[in-house]
Image (cartoon, rainbow, N blue to C red; front, side, top):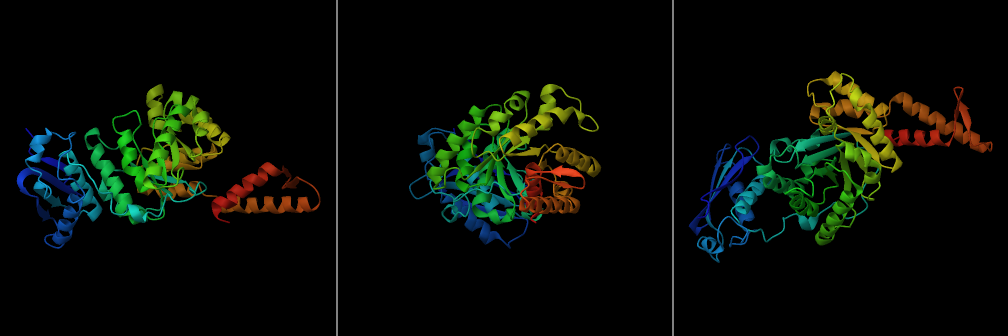
Length: 416
């Protein structure tokens, strides 16, 4: 027996609940919306557009025998009933939820996402040098958090398919993120767009890549990395999908996360395993849990692993991004955590709430005093070079090429 009904989405604000039921008649679409009749036509058109992307015959991998499926899916198109309960969802959300319900029913999508042919990213050299002071996590399956994402001011928006999505919703989340990237990328503004996928060895990692790589996120955040071989495996898998999608191989960057003792021991080789790696992230919560560390008031238990991670990242010429600060309402604690991370050499920090962005961006931006110092260093060394000297003094301290490099880095970060 075929399951009678397949659901996707939720009845939460900004989302929609889609129910598909097999039946003998040509597909009927029913819509109820919290906005009344205002957007009914648009919702109907979106649902029908997505239904037209699917073959009218359930796949053999579907929930029931193929011969049972044929009873409801004749050559004229899908059959049955598609009911959409809208709670103010945008078109891409409705499209993703319809796709998820039909996929759960065993149908296969045979047409690519509509915006794939007009892709603007993934066609050239990736921007390795852009600032990554703030990396904001957004759960991939909560569309209400996507709508204003581009207004938050984060350097990087990280759409999460891993820890923030329960196992039974993984497929829905990846379809939603793929539709967001394909159809409403503008919602993410000028932030770097990254997706945290599930590990390749998990039941969801490969499907995550197949869904999101063709939509050209600027970076993939790779969780629970513990070896260079893992990075090379990711690289090979992504390269094949880039070629298949018509993207320039290597255009999608990697941001591996170090979350275990084994990962920290291999951090240097992980950072150097692929030219895609642009930053190493630190997953402090998982690291604490594995080692049984007690959370200290000044995060003293993280001082050594933070230092080791920064050294590994900088040795490979990539950035180091600190872990999230989990107390949403503790702005003082967040400020102090960010200041400690910057003092240790991190160039940015992951975040779990938009209210953290301004504080973290400020901490990881050069101060006016630092910019003034950097200009003095550049000027003093330029004057020394005119006199045939490679070093000089500034306020009684010797300055030379390493400090010139530091000064240039500060000015670049300040846009000066």
